[in-house]
Image 1 (tube, rainbow, N blue to C red):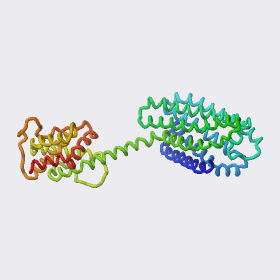
Image 2 (image 1 turned 90 degrees about the horizontal axis):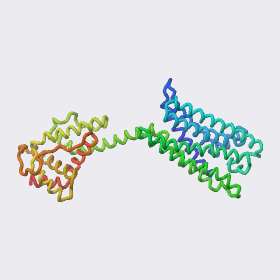
Image 3 (image 1 turned 135 degrees about the vertical axis):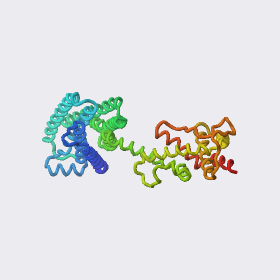
Image 4 (image 1 turned 30 degrees about the horizontal axis):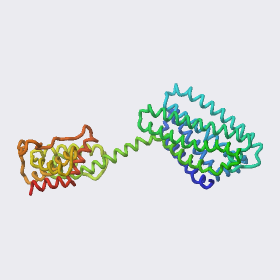
Length: 405
């Protein structure tokens, strides 16, 4: 597993440091945000721990310091105890006002300090009896009572902390008001549970050595647990920051697609009714929301302007052909609307008009009933449906051909 760790752990270290620098943008001069500071500490500590966990770096640190297994101690304290405590502090300050969060945070910090002092003491005792550096400190020394006690304390603390992180995340997600915060908390909970596989694996090693088993044979679980769980934790903790930008990008893309889908109908109206257009056509995509709004309004203005040119026979014919084609509901309405608009545009081009009260059949509307939505999104969905029918529907084409044949 040394080769896998040499690849996975540096990538995880880079991920944690990337998250650290990304969140640094939230620092404000003269303003102390305890949740942000705890989050930055968590990312920095875990990024450092994963760097130290890289076999080549751990070996170099031990050699340069002259202290065997000092890198393992730093990984366990910084990337284990302190990291998990920092994440718990983040959740506390996200969920409570500082006045309520600080008392809860203080006793968690106290427990972490006690754990660190105890682990340091056990490690010092174990080091005094060690014969040299260990490639896998816990697994290769787990048969020694002092290291077994150290490992049990470390593994137990991390499992409790990770389960507590998952529990708090799931609990707070139920009452979180922001959608992306809610998603982030649930993703963090999933990551914490997956990451706990590492420490379940370490706990099993304490038992397995008593039966002459070789825990190194399933060390792959450590790489999988960290490689899957930690990206989920980092992603979940940063999601409230980048999630809204993803929503904005998704909205922009939907607006762009709607804007493009309305183009054929809008251009056809623009050619015959230039007075409805406030701004000339342009290829730039700046201020897309406003331009989409204007395009929808201009199409509606065009529908109204074309009412004198709409013929009831077109509506009757389009309705009949649409029903024969199996169209119902809004799909049928869109086809009828598109057919009337296409015939009206052609009639205007030819210079003819039909009185609006003229009717060949009283059972069908002479002109548009202006179906649509209550907001820009639903309105553009409806107009896009008309535009597609206007351009591609064989029913519309057949209705127009029958009118002018």
